[in-house]
Picture (cartoon, rainbow, N blue to C red):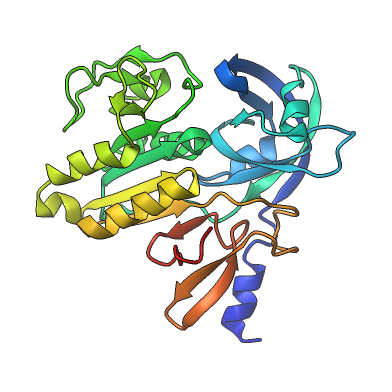
Length: 299
């Protein structure tokens, strides 16, 4: 093994912690969606936008579940999840004061590039949390100018409000936003094909393309698209970014067993300078340059 390969293999050493977390709060939203705040000081201190945690949902269920981190502050992290299957059903029953095992933070994060301060944050469904984390990191740095586009085909996991912040390329009646991002001063618009009031009637890529169409060459050169969501959405985002010639980072969603690189069950095909390869979404990702992912091989 070369020295570079050895360092690559060991780069996650001493960066992932196991600790007993305590549920601090839980909010329930339509369609079985929950926002949960968990005290996990070690994880919170090391988490970066794009990091995720592997949670023990119940003492009766040995397999953990991977959850993107939506926020991390002081000694707590927040996650957003939707009940899909037994594990997340059990997690939804946790109440403030309950404990659960937290393994994290895990994964390669989004890379914030001050040379490209125009940030287009695109989140779909349970892919919304990493975009909130990116926005949180950027709002502390005046160099960045984030815009967020969030999509969902079920009711959003927050109380939609009317935005007072202008959003380039959005019609006046497209004014629904996420209260948290609004309070941070991050212009945000919502998309859905379900006819929700204040939402753009179309896909996230449709609204994003409007903004890109209205941007000049200099703006595009200084833009990075950050995205997380279901694979069809990410494929469309990657194609859109290539069409407009803008940088793009995507956080892939894959089924994970160990989530620490041991089982390789989450491996995806990528095209590296040295040739095609398989990389693990959990520790080599979940964030990848969209141009590296072999979308034809990605289911």
